[in-house]
Length: 162
Image 1 (cartoon, rainbow, N blue to C red):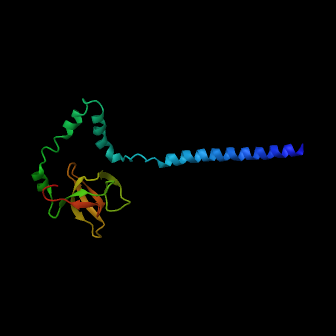
Image 2: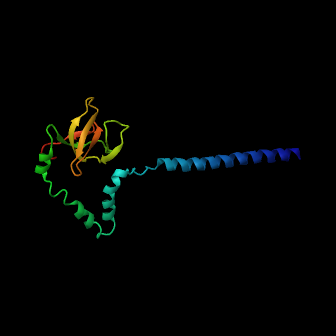
Image 3: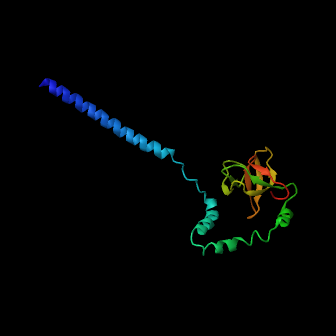
């Protein structure tokens, strides 16, 4: 009788260890597969108005012309000649080269408040560079919003605009 109880004890321990190992393996597999998924791109508060017309375009076709017509007068009356007239002395057009886009800040500091953003390949006008050369004051042509971005994340555009 003693021998059968020892076997029962050993089988109980083995079954318990296997069930714990199986459960831990299942939980580990679940967590690793969840971590392997690419997270969605974050949406910043200043980007929401830009994405709403895109969502409207994905929705029924009727609402999309209304925002498009409301925004279309801005680009139409401002041809390249008018944009060039608005350039201050020493200012030049540039394009964002940082893949995630840039945060537009109210002061030349990483601790300064965000007042907007510029998407990758977005156009902006460089007004001046800070004394230390780490920040550039920029203006967004469509909204005439002025702020600061980190230097070195833009590339100067040709005078033709491309």
